[in-house]
Amino acid sequence: MTRKPWMTLGPPAHIVERFFAKHGRAGPVLPDGWYGRPFDSLFALTSAADLPDGLKIEIEGGRELILEGNVTIVKTEFEKSPALRIEGFRSASWNPHDGVVDRQTYGESGAVVLVP
Image (cartoon, rainbow, N blue to C red; front, side):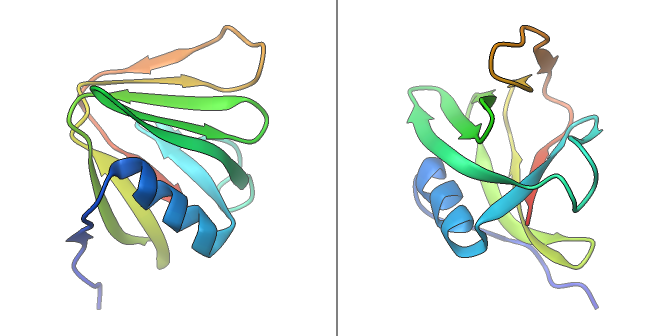
């Protein structure tokens, strides 16, 4: 039996910070799939900040995710693990490493999931 996801209330950056405070580390599932090895490439949060039009999440190693638009964060499960699902953005950009310019950009289709 799968529990129904529920929307969390509060500023998106605060929700992300609380999630990492509880779980310590998480792996990002980007709109095109896992970043790194599933359930193995886990990263600590460096910072999370609400932007005037979106959300910026930085995780260790200089990895940066910028979501533009009216993001919604849903607390849910991902393959039986607790997770945060971030959706509703009109664009997202992912910079995979500090100093690397190979930035990936995503449009509205999809979501980003943080899985501990």
